[in-house]
Image 1 (tube, rainbow, N blue to C red):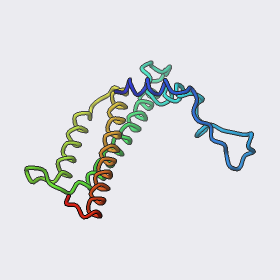
Image 2: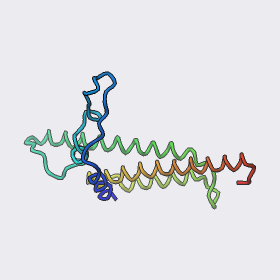
Image 3: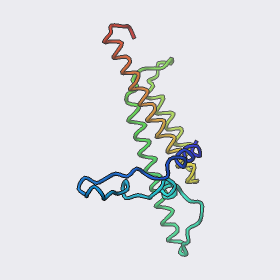
Image 4: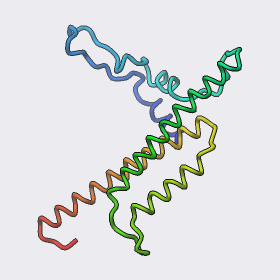
Length: 159
């Protein structure tokens, strides 16, 4: 999945869209967030490299590793909070009479616990991207269904 997304981004035109500044002359343009020139450079910057950095000191290497872990932990916690927020909207019950909100939260907890000790940065990135995609698509589908229900109610149809 991650490889196909990466290939998709690589196949895009090689440059990030240029955005002119409002306060600058029309001939002056800048890159989005003053970022890299190509998608390849952007991906290289944000994807973890498997090469070992040229760090002589073990303390410095440990500090760098902790900083990376802190960043991914922060992203994972943010994703977990997003999942919990998204499940608030699932207030109906399943066939067993259990709220979908509780089922979704339990499954999310299991997924996060299963990946808790994953150390491969590529796998962690893939899991984070997949999780955020799943949350956003679930919310999109929920919003679409709610719009359909509102339209049916406005037309006087039964749900």
